Image 1 (cartoon, rainbow, N blue to C red):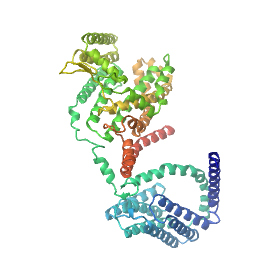
Image 2 (image 1 turned 45 degrees about the horizontal axis):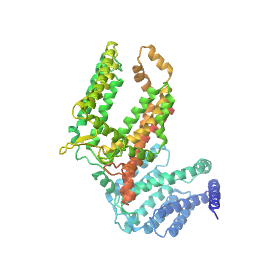
Image 3 (image 1 turned 180 degrees about the vertical axis):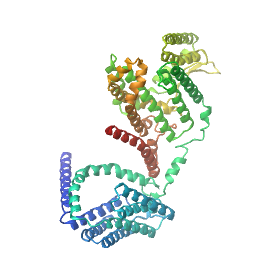
Image 4 (image 1 turned 60 degrees about the vertical axis):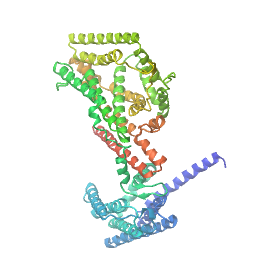
Amino acid sequence: MGRLGVTALGIVLAVGLSAIVFVGINKLFDLTEKRYAIFSSAAGLILSGATFAVLWANRMIVSPVAVTLTAALIGAAMGYGLGVVAARSLRLAIGVGGGVALGLLLGVMVRSSIWPSIDPLAAVIGLAIGAGLGVLVWMAGGRGTNLASRLLAGLAIGWLFGAWLAAGDAGTQAEAVFVSVVLGALIGASIGSHPFATAAERAEIAIGSRKYIFLGPALFFVAATLVVPLARTVWLGFQTGNPRELRWTGFSNYVDMFTDPTIIDASDWTDIFGSRLTWIAVVLIIIGVGIGRWLGRSGGTGLGTGFSMSAGTLTLLAGGVTLLGFSVFVAIRGTIPNNLWWIWAVIIFAVALGLAVAVLADRSRGENIAKAMIFLPMAISFVGASIIWRLMYVARPPRDPQTGVFNAIWVQVGVLSNSDTASTVLSMMFFLAVVALVYLAWRGWKAKSNSIVAGALAVALPFVWLIYRFLGPGLGGYATVEASGEVVAQPVLFIQEAPWNNFWMMVVLIWIQTGFAMVIFSAAIKAVPNELLEAARIDGATESQTFWRVTIPQISPTIGVVVTTLIVTVLKVFDIPKVMTNGNFDTQVLANEMWERAFTQLNFGLGSAVAVVLFVAVLPVMYINIRRMQRERAG
């Protein structure tokens, strides 16, 4: 049989089995009204057998076939008893008896590698927390529900975590049997404490089951591809060793992770206060705040608080805050600080550049062409973009021609800086630019437009710095050898030189995500009602005031969505560091750390712990997004 035949046979079998399962489940729930005992027996058989099958699939029990069949038979007998007995005391006895039998089977057949060494304190704490959760679930579901069942289920979950999952390794089989029997008894008691279903309740089960039957396949695949792997990853995070010899070690992986200097190293945190970046950032922030206060008090674009939010003040403040963050991440090193640095830089630059392009290109000539060019990098994969930028960052030996774009430019700037004629000419050009900007500021002063004054002076600052560099210490990739007086190239090792190699890799993601942010912001800006903009202009607002007071508040939800989306994207970034440095030169991030620990060092426990930390870091962002969507729908 050829490949086409095998594929066709697979499709037929998949469709046929799906149809059989779908029809079978429907027929099973049809039994609830008139043959409740048979339904209850079948449900017990399926649930018990499936539970032990999952344990077998995860290599937790021995003799998998015999144990699974035995568990299925015990579950069927327990289900049948609960399906025919109405007396509460007998139902409780049947539930506890069946749970104890299943727990005893599990304790006897569980593998020795996961025998728990019971910690009484952890067990008691687990029971207390479980009881609290059970009561909370009961209160959330309405106090008319069965409190005993919820409380016993919570105790079972608390016992599982406190007596087994939080226990040490190298336990005994007696302890495994004890924990399993108690766990089974609690679960069985929770099931048995439910009162016997009345005819009306059985009819409701038959009708209400249809929606779950139709949702079942989708929920199954979600569970198989997301929930089960997540649960297994959390489970592996509490173990150490290679995949064939895992042993339970509790929270040791998390302790190792947060005490490993390659993951977090804050030993040089005091360098933050002596860093030149810090002082430049402080100066920029002070200047920005001062100009904003001056513009706000002198009738600029103040927001009613005595502070003006204009392009000039925002540029200074954003630059200062960005450099301040950079000074922190340069001093505090490791995988987690690297990830935080990625979030900090990519969010600031991608959002700022995307918003700037969206605003400047809005309703201008050639808008579609400009936006298409900026959005184009989104069509390139992270791997392709990493290769492109790695070639642009290439640094060849000093005496060889530089083929990397940035080093070629940098070296040429160094050539010009070491030439008296060229440096003088360039300084004069920069001086003329400063003069033009000062003239623009003067014209703005005469026109009583303080925002133009602030913007022009802010733009003039980089040109003043360039004049100082060209006339003073020089600039660019050339240096003089003291011994021979020879002037040689000094290419920048963009990828190898830590810690700034991290930022040069961030540029790749900023380049890609700026187009995404621009498209979203452009759509949001075009959706701002023209009536609001016209009303602001009629009231005498300038374009700057209209932008900051009308447009920004209107698109603030969109800005929040873009920011949270970028945070999730940055947290799971893997391709760019993998392709450009393979995590070397102090460029490791969480996703690469997880890969390195799990699949290179075969330490699945530590790799899983890193994955759990990454997952937990994403949860708040997802929660914020969900809450925002719920509020928008409610509004």
